[in-house]
Image (cartoon, rainbow, N blue to C red; front, side):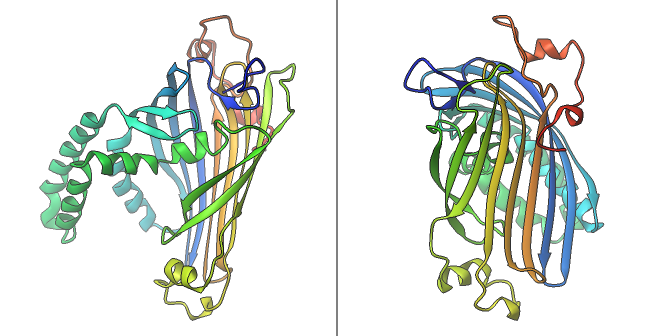
Amino acid sequence: MLWNSNNKLSRQITFKNIFSERYLVEQTSEIVMSSLVIKTVTEFRWDVRVLKVSDEYYHIELLSLDNVLKETNNPNMRDLNAFNNAFKRMYSELNMIINRQGELIKLNNIEEIQRKWAQVKTEMEAVQTKHDNMKGLIALNDDLFNNVENITEAVKGNEFFEVFLNVFMGVNLPGSKKLKKKSLFAQESIHWEYDINCNPSLPTNNNVVIIDIKGRVSQSLDKSWIKRAYGSFPIAELADRQPVLADSAKYRIDHTSGRLLEGLITKEEAVHEEFLKAKMVYRIVADHPKAEEQEPGESSRQKEEQGNANPRKTSIILD
């Protein structure tokens, strides 16, 4: 992402040069549904490679290296996480064309995703006799992975777009952006408007800019919306309650190399403090979280050979 001061894009954060970087992402979640409280801490690692930058699009490869459930207060979540990881194998390698607003416009490796599904399907069919609901699950995902549009829509829901690209790509800063997203409970969509600011307004000597994002709901959450969003939860205490919603983020970006250095993303949805609420926090840190002066053509992968930095010790957002 580059703060370009020489043309009409001077007020935008955009990718300029190709680069490669690895990231540690920590997801902390707390979900309360009636008497059920689920807390988890999950860590996953990404290898993000910007392969090409053009005036219209970015060619990006995303490799998911690890996905580990580190902590939970519910032992059943470990089995569920292992089950989910089996499906995430299909999306462990994504070769994508993304427009300058950070939106997916094409998947280049759909055939590879379908090949992985064929492998997982064979494994599931071998054990489906032990689980009554497995057959229906196989059929459901067969429909998904045999349809190119369905696969593309599923990839658009990948955490990468929410955590790494967020809403600031291609926006004149300071500025705003309107977006429609699913609620944290995934029952209904919400219209958001995001205020996006940059500090400082021009590049600094250490080549770092801070992006600050604050979201606000830009629609009326009337009774019909509330019924669609929470009507499936048989909790009497939810009647006539307005949800409290929050969506914010802060990022450090090296404007000279285009690398995201670190970020903190917080999402909350509370209908009732005791019976229905959810909170998700994502922390993302580059293996090399400092802005660096690089010689022309030198990538962050070359810098990695000089030794890994400790992201926790250099963070100004996370600690």
